[in-house]
Image 1 (cartoon, rainbow, N blue to C red):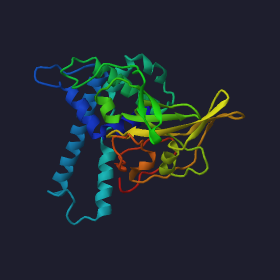
Image 2: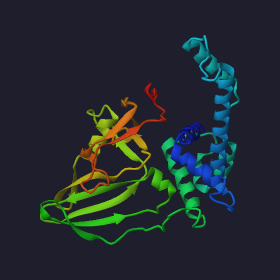
Image 3: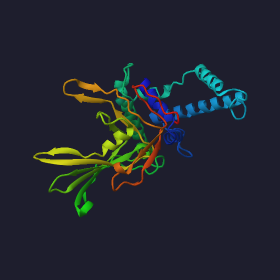
Image 4: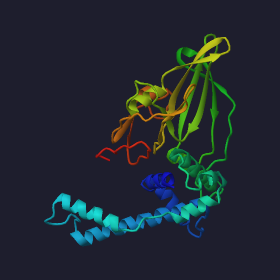
Length: 314
């Protein structure tokens, strides 16, 4: 279950997510019972993890003085002692979360010790939490809305006063979508026809790194906005995807598998560089985006089967 552990390690360090599941796991308000299922198990896991982490910090302070920096000790020695303390601790196993997963059918194929995809597990995990959140009584989930499959299209005026047919495909809104959810604006243009726009939700930005010119996460992000040729019968149209809304917590999925007509499914092991901060520039933001200025994100976690090292600034 290393793929699951990698995801859980990232989630416990995601402050908005951790605060949400701990609050709901303990009961959202006065007189309300703690929730059960995966949501309750996750809340208990995060709460226990935080308590153990805090206990480790207090032990370090007691051993090294008020500042916890070990008077008279060099940095290398303090680091060595910290590593020894970490090794002596018992492994932190999220048994309650594993037990809760057993009761959910979508996780059936992830049992038996098989290696699975961490991004797929994250998607299933958040889907399950979202379903449980939406099933809670209304006072518990603040401002949750009913799912809306799609709204009828409407006309809007685009650039050069061209009529644009816009359609929104909207999933259920929940505390999970408010943390991780963004929106794409996909525009299809064909000569002699009205532009067709679809606005839809996403929870992770999937980045194509197959092209030789892509060496960094920034390169892959810029490629999202490149217009792509689309064949519509005898007419060749162009499709451009831009970001209409960004989430508070951004999840990036680097696509390392692609299909080759000769070799079949191929794994791409190329290294893709990234830094401690990521800027989403205005070049990939839609004209109607909720934010028009570049947005900066700070990296706090990563998971990969390809060896990599987080930047020292993280």
